[in-house]
Length: 313
Image (cartoon, one colour):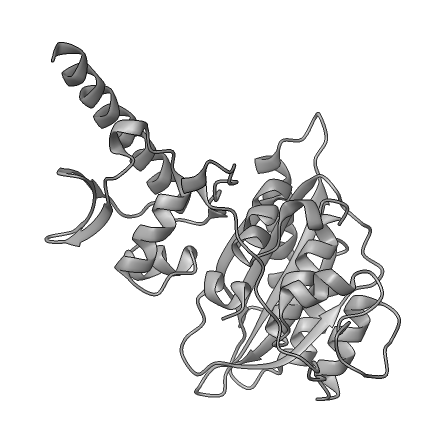
């Protein structure tokens, strides 16, 4: 599944019907990127409403739209803005959000469903999760990092796009190339002519923390308040408790005494996360970053207790 599909959490059987790339968007290298997922009103067209909405957002990078199983339309707007000494990341995220709110005021039938924000480091974490090392895209702007994730929505393998950057989206397949990687990718999707590579791609080796290689920890994206377990799992791009437990393990630092302990999720009268035999409840509403921070605090406390026991022995 494309990363953006997973993190935004569309209902099953939703369809992608359109996408666009704002080639006039300025390249942003250090700042905040956002995705705003909007449900449109009955009988509204995704193409028309997306064009109207994005016309009010000068920093939008691109986006995509589609339809729910019942035929109602939805759209997603991607934006990026720089941070400055006088404007923190949260301030910039708030400014981008307020721009969307002002644009939505012109369409009272549209409803904001979800907002996700990333810093540059968080986008690089996403790429590493997709088997792309940060060093391979360190020269990319945040705008292009968003466009790269958008190519996944077209069904492209992200590593192929990275390998062909900046000129070609399909370096291993014969095709009429557009000469610019994202134009090449999006034109192929619009014209339904995604070329097939001559040979099967092989996945690169991924860094393994067990053999002492440094691995960039996942940083959870900032989200709006999440109200139940399903929203929490979807915010991390996970399908169930097992996937989310694995996600959490990749987000935290486990001290040596806990290196072999599992992170488990249990549902009793609520959702609980456990490290070994020690558990803490997840109280809703919450944010994904808060869940990770609380878990790290629990791990630190348990790890210190283990070390004290060892010292006494």
